Structure formats: structure tokens, C-alpha cells
Length: 198
Image (cartoon, rainbow, N blue to C red):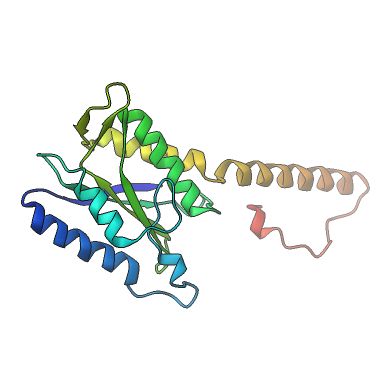
């Protein structure tokens, strides 16, 4: 999985708010494929499947810090990291980040399926509440945080399930081949096993 910061915003809060509104408009309305609907591009959060843009902007801007207003992050699984429920997958990745950071994170996301690599745009507020003290603290993103997100993305994908199924199918094929060879027959069952990595 690719997890990268696509930039962050700091400085003047009014300018930061205006840029954040523009960013949300961009990720909500950027050109869609024929398979995408308006509902596919709804802003979602850790708790809600549909969030009003104004509410998302207000929450993020209520949780800025002196070092950064907000972070922009892109999460993109690799071709062999299968994701069925993108919102739940994003929530699991962000929950792991929240645990590692030790603070409540305020984030909002939109999924894009308009490229060869489906991905999620995440906006992460620049501060969050410490889990132990409840005190608001800056949220900083370092190399190890992105590494953790990549590992988390793989862990929460269906990659392992598909890998195990593929191995089982290969074992069944090998067993069938052995049995046919013992009987003096080659395999000719008309099945195309290319999809299973054979």
C-alpha cells in the first residue's frame, strides 16, 4: 500500500480554511468515472458515512495547531491488497494511527475510483486530544507514521485471505496432477487457472 502525505497547510487560518474548502470541493467533485456516483464521493469520518462539507471544515479548523492546520494524506492499496469496504478499511487504518499517536484524531475522507489505482483522500486535523490527559496536542506526521499506515493497510485488506485461497487452489491442482499422472493421464479439464497464479 502507498500511504503518503500529499501536503499540509500551515499559517493563516482564514487562508487555510479557504484552501480546505477548495480541497474538499475538489475531492468531492473531481471528474468521476461512469462507475462512480455522487454517493461514492461523499465525505465520511470515523463515525459517519456521510458528513456535510461545512461540518468537516469546521471540525478540522477547530483542531489546528501552531505548527500545522491540517495534513492531507492519500491511501492507495497495491494491486494485491483487496479492499471490499473502503470506509471500514480507512477507519481501521486511521484507528491504528490514532492508537500509535496516543490521541483522538479528527479526520475526514473521500474515496476516488477514477484512476487505475483506487485511493482515499484523507484530511487530518493538526491537533487532537491526548488519550490520557484529554489535553489538545499537535498531530505531527513522520516517516514512521506513514510506514505504520502502509503496514496497517495491508493487515486490514483481504490480501491474506486471497493469498491463502490461492495456495489452497495450487495444492489441489498439484494433487490432481499427481493423481492423473499415476493413472497415466494428462490434465485436460478445460479449466483456465490463470486467475489463481498458476
